[in-house]
Image (cartoon, rainbow, N blue to C red):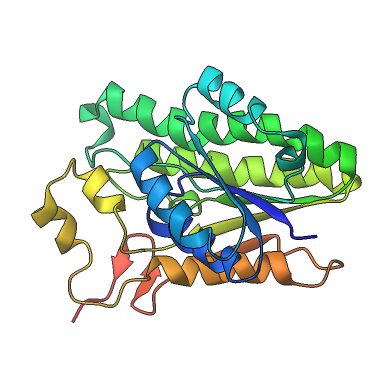
Length: 250
């Protein structure tokens, strides 16, 4: 019987690439996001390989999360793999000039949203004594950089939550993996710089950034190792990056 994976933030970037990688391994999918049209497009494509369900909600809204996940049939609630990928970065201001709206978006999306989805999935894993949770952190969770204090704090929280999940859930046969990507060329910078395409493009100039498929490959590796193995933490940089804020450009 194929495994079932739930992926948040599945409409683009790492989430979409992970969905494609899982489909190639015959893993059925619950694809979650805020853009139903995009979910439909991905579901139509991947539905030729595996069974696909889509759920539309904002991870920052617990009521939306609860209603969406509770709408799943008993079969689809038996989730084997949870990929907490949804998240965001907003703004690149110094802490004294930061926007409260941006802070709320990052804390609510990167931390609360991860907890909300996990809260509704974990009990089924605990009951079945099996499961695997993948949390998408960032190298920003390993080392704080200037103009990114709140984003870095939100990703440090993901690192702590991953550690805490592992401490609490290992006894139930549940694996927890923390993935910390460096610079990945996705919609990330477009969102951070509020759709300033020119400024976003400069983030990736002069070197080969990671692509979403690189992170999907790491996630797929973590979920396909032998059952006795738990990959606890993976940090992934592009070759040109040596620290969160140090990139060697041509």
